[in-house]
Image (cartoon, rainbow, N blue to C red; front, side, top):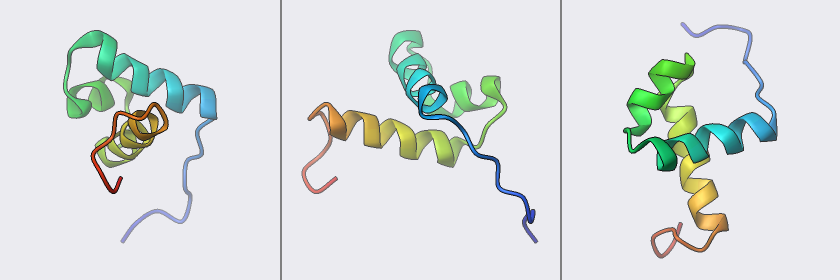
Length: 60
């Protein structure tokens, strides 16, 4: 089963990690692996950041 402890990240960390995906040209999975975080977490942050910039797919 999963851990009882959920790691919390600052908004700044989430923003920087999302920006790293764009600036590095690497996949979300590769960036997440380098940062030692869950690829699903980073994927969610990245999608949210794109939507906030108006770049998301319709319905996101």
